[in-house]
Amino acid sequence: MTDLGLERREWDSKASMLAYLMTTESFVVVGDDAEAPRSFTSYKLTPHTEVGIISSENGGKPEVSRLANGIVLIGHDSSLTWVDPAAGCTLASRQLVGAFFGFRGLPEQRDALVVHELGLLRVDGAGHTKWCLDTDIVEDARVESDRIILKLMAQEEPIVVEPNSGSVLHER
Image (cartoon, rainbow, N blue to C red; front, side):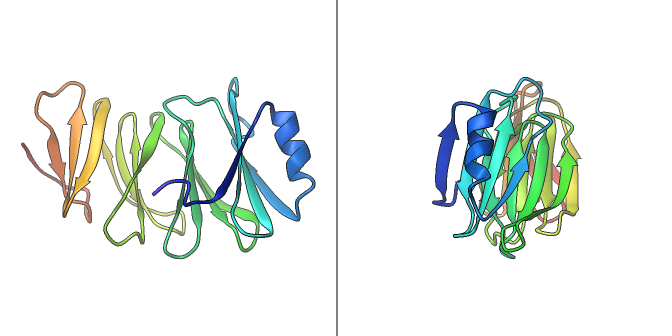
């Protein structure tokens, strides 16, 4: 679900990435407020639009996911950012409760399932949160057919979450 086969470039510094982006027709930069940035990555979203991601890599590396409506969702540090590649602009952003860990695929790809340090949330391409589940520290999350299996650090057995509502169905 991540990187989407997009042209990706790693940069040695923020300055070198920004110098490159300034030569492109249209670009968006996310994570400009990252504390102690260590990672500088750019993606070509369309032939005319690129996105630069500045990250401290708190939790994990940034990830990119394209939603069904063509909007690109970027997870980085403890944030989510929605980018419209056609318009070359940021649509929305959201601060997460914990560090971003990654996206997990959903069967229909209309929305994105976001895993972070302290839970899960399901978001759509308009920047809206459909549901949010706050938990103890997340060790692992995976989608199995019509359910999400969530392993938490403080629990021996995983919990099972219904992907449409975010309701905890039961503990395994």
